Image (cartoon, rainbow, N blue to C red; front, side, top):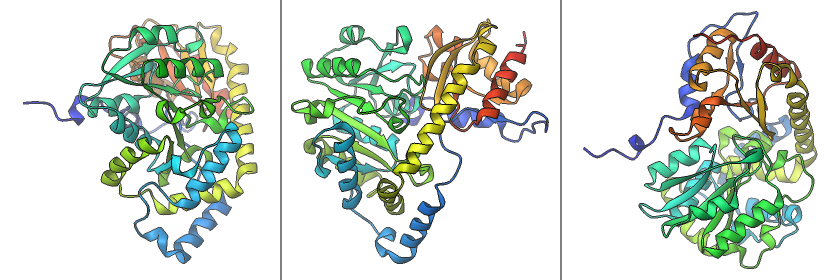
Length: 393
């Protein structure tokens, strides 16, 4: 019997790792330090929740079907924000609102690919991207990163075939944290244009980029609408993970195809979440700047404290946004060690094997540390627990 679409891929790493801690009691002197997921655990700020409550009571439209590509006021506001941030000319007709950024990716792939087509993903990859490609019948072409966890344009060019439809990049990167230089993004864009492909850039974590100003000028490229798609998420910016609000910026012809997918999947994005995202754009930019500053302080705490475990052979491979990507010094696979860290150290990190093809040996040496929900005390505990860890034979 042929496999179903869901059987063609693996169990979500977040679901799998959650099972490692479900029902487990952790000692009071060493409570669980969960560094597995890159999602805010705090609710939105009170003023935003008040605005959502008011909309729920006073705006009947938030309880009804809405436009497939999203509320016009949110699309307008995001267009203005994008124009300012990227010094570009983007219109609301080039914006679609989605039920989270994962759906933005799925909708974009659905608009681009047929059965057996190919998409190039740098590895380590974001596992949900790989999972959706599997379920869509699209072949993933791994592109192992090189020095400083950066993908190579030259190597990517060797992987392009007649079935290639897109190249996917994430910056700041998940899982590696690194911020891709503008020149690298431009080089990948030029490669996409030369081969009549689409460059998909997931900028979910753009609000926590350590750099100031626009991270690239791709929206200023002639005919960018044909070769470039940007994905974005409001979840991280305004703590709206449970309300599922993401966005796609693409050419109108591409959005017309994407609209078919969205209409079939969800009909319209979460209305109340869209109201919240719009209110956030209008009123929370100073608050968001403070959130960014705090994430950058935590990033610096990782950099400053890493020497404690570097002495034991650990290596810091990438750092930025919500993530540190590290290499361990032990002979055991990170898959085995991850469970041992839970049992011995009350520490949950995702093994690199969850971000790489099964035949890639690099994953067995690596971990992703999602530190956005760990304050300075939690980061200090992280290093203390790793330093005290002794792997089991």
